[in-house]
Image (tube, rainbow, N blue to C red):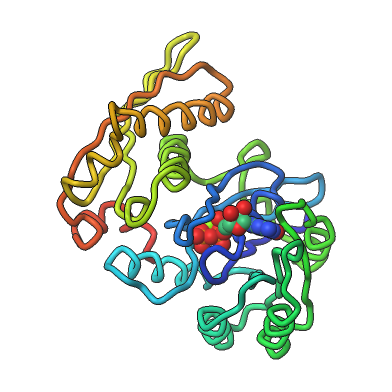
Length: 290
Ligand SMILES: Nc1nc2c(ncn2[C@@H]2O[C@H](COP(=O)(O)OP(=O)(O)OP(=O)(O)O)[C@@H](O)[C@H]2O)c(=O)[nH]1
Ligand SMILES: [Mg+2]
């Protein structure tokens, strides 16, 4: 069978996670309008009759603004190694310095690269030209797509033809290497990214404390970490409105994911300046830094 690892890399918010979901045909990775949504390396697996593709979603490559950003950058850079193919994603609506920075990182690797200019549905001609320019010295194959509109079939066909013959890396029914607790914490985090503003999404993390499986119901207890006291009030919202909204949206997605009724209990805890705390960051990201 054809098989291999395909790393999806690029600047923040160019649509990497949207592309991974479209290619796999399932929502494995969380997506939001805000840059910096993906924090971890996440394998999303597509198994077909004669092929298995392991897509590796990564954090956006950017100049870090805090210690957590450093970790995210390290994860993104280390994920570039050891793949059969890299998809270098750019946005047709905005090309800038960070895309050039990504190109520089990719130039030294000996891995084949497909260039993907995404968001063609909102393309700006000058930006598309810039993107083609950046890609022209890196790769022969350039795809211009809109992942939002699901235009990934041709790209998928080319990826599969390009991959070598190889083993099946994962069992047929597995779509991600991540455990359920990670998927649940990501769903909660996605809702925080969707509903809150300014520094709040970047100052929060979600810990799953307990998952209790009953016959007709799964009970989930989770803690939202914030980095200072004033952020706790924002996550709770007036009369607890914000945390209720986060919980309602997250519960619906979790119910869809596990196909069961869910009781979701969210709790907020202040861990002072955790995004600058090496010990906490090591706990969150430690096993990903290889
Ligand atoms: N118009 C348009 N928007 C898109 C397209 N693909 C993704 N988006 C939007 O772009 C935003 C960012 O998408 P993500 O998939 O989260 O981007 P990312 O590159 O994974 O971002 P980070 O994880 O933060 O690095 C979301 O609001 C998506 O809905 C597209 O083809 N067209
Ligand atoms: Mg992402």
